Image (cartoon, rainbow, N blue to C red; front, top):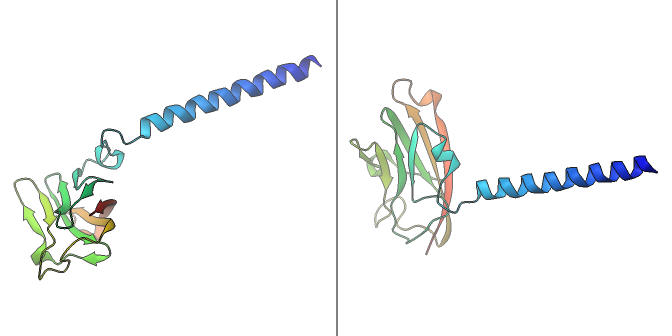
Length: 139
């Protein structure tokens, strides 16, 4: 009988502890300040443009700001952006594309859009590339 009461208390304590840990993790991972763990924890990526889960206009610029020494390719909604339409600002090492008439994407699709950037250190080349992807909403 005493063992049953002790076991019940231990199990209730463990359940309460697990609940507290779950709440703490949810608070830490909540995107309340646009602190994107995949960006802040990645030495190569300085900024996603637009940020993950942002709401933007259909002609919004899409791209990435990388640390110096990296190169990139951009895909939006499965469409590879040709190098001649991908704007590169060397001073910032920012790679961007702005939809417009006559371009491979004339406007972002209504609702969800997803971008994929393949990036690599220039010294090693695209054979050792990494990727980062994110989605945002256009209106």
